[in-house]
Length: 311
Image (cartoon, rainbow, N blue to C red; front, top):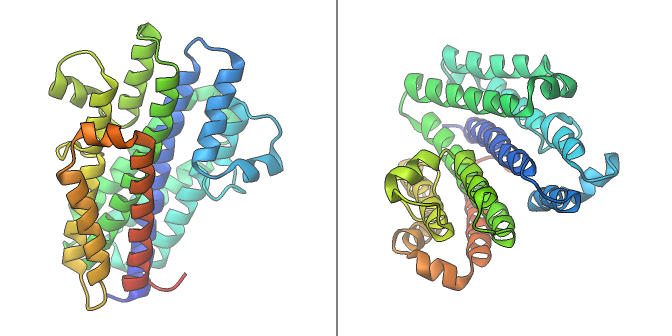
């Protein structure tokens, strides 16, 4: 496969997954903002979301006060923010358009229809309908694109690069979401009804609430939340599951120059496969997740170097 084609497919998948994960992160942040708390605490949580995505300076250029409406506007539909849902889905569509001939017609139509429908919605319309309904729409459209992709694409290198891009992005965003929300929740841990609501919102944001109930069958315990989202191989959005998929995709597309990237992926996978939650918490959850994100970034750099066109 031409590296330029692989590049477009890889980044199309990454930006589609990024839009979905951003919707998940914003949704849980919005749901948590509805829990009784001081305005200062609420705004500090939104400031943490901007910091998590390294967007404080970009936000300050166009917006003054950090509050729920300003952050949502900036992260949902601001075309000047390259990390907004609007920008992510636009870039995903541009990458898909560049390689229309490589994709099935159904896949292209699902990507293009998502972009067309998004352009018909402005922020006031989204607020009027309810922001959670909009986030559900983003998650649904991402699921449709993913389902059409897996259901119609030939199982060749094109599909492998799409899956690789999605897994890299998913692992990074799961780590970011858990890092930010776990820190906030531990700061506000009151062992009461609002505490249960916050932990439940975090699990729901990663489609993990029902899974948690099935696996652990008791009250929501922070250490078990971390274990589920980091180490459980059978949890689709866990760091372990993402690392396992990355290793398998790299094996399928391996070339003469990718041995070091494969090794790095294997080391990351082994750390998760043989890890224990007690060791993770002893190291410090923030430190562990920061190390994971650094390793994912390094893997992304290796994939670009070994398979894709130069940036």
